[in-house]
Length: 467
Image (cartoon, rainbow, N blue to C red; front, side):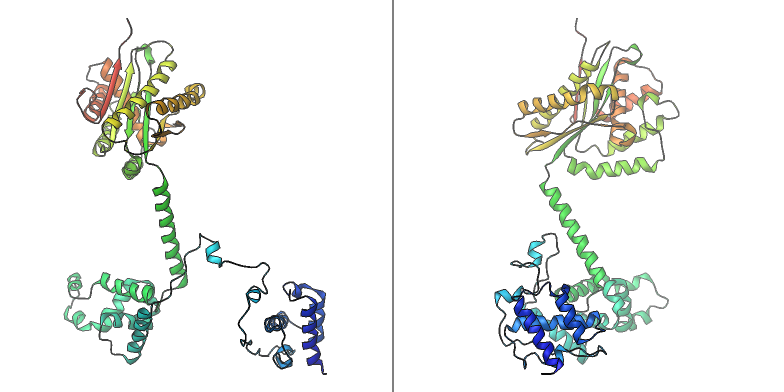
């Protein structure tokens, strides 16, 4: 028995000793010893070929010297050798399917990874036949239909596979040159005569996606699939979330000795629907370049146009909004009164929405207020708890109260609107002059309708002082 036959026998003996468990063999001294006997200068590729021979021995389960020849088992020092194809005379047994794996796999990998993109379905017989006809027509160059012409361009010009614009330019120059020559000089109206861009793009997607011919770069296709997956995740997340009622509220206290305490702002009946309007409102606010927040108390002659323009923007997007404001005559320590006004305002606003038929399904309640460190530290947890209890009593199993969120006013445009509404409500109740603040208060009333109790989309109440 020569050296080559010795190698084959050594490999078989090694497999028999391991009872067909060969996963760890490339990392053992025994395997390295065999590789050194074959070739003292064996490379990684050489060792890999010997490893493949081991796998074939295991698969055949009792390979004879003729089935695994010494030539395919013995790599040469020159690294130029071929491996004969594996024998497929016997169907693989269930145990052999997982041979060479660290762990048995009972399910396919994609099913174990739900985040993975789904595999492409197999072509139907009709699609496969149509695919073959396409290839035959292109090879024979009849190019009678628009689909065949697009396929011709996609086959010969790879840059058109990822760009409708590149596809259309090539297509028009190749198949509609008489139209382009007739329009000299070129005018945009030529598009009326040329095959339409969207039509050619739709044909390209049919060829690439349905027939899977002349597809784009793998990176582009993967990016498109990732964006599609991200869109589906976004839609799924929004479908599973509850609709949300939001309150943006600001308080106005008894500053300057005024016997007046109030809470006012806006109630968004369905945040999912109003969210896009809020984004536009925030974008408009950002584009104005006003760094400092808009405060009613600072609305002098120079800053009055800013506040009025913000109210105009709010007025144009008032659909789905309920303007709310509660106040009472109060002096001295007003934190307890403010606490009670917040709770009562939210409860009464939700009752108003229910009477209007706006609470037809379970919803979450989110209250956002201007941050006030002193008030928030003392009352915010208690106010969240009490509001939740009150909502549970008034609307059992209908509404869920989220923790009240304190936010700095300058970071949210709707809180700026709530500041103007609260300030205008107080100013209108205490003064009737014509200075800038009074004019701003009049604009607030015109937008919210607080002075007209019959105005829809408004909830306003003032509690006078007790005798």
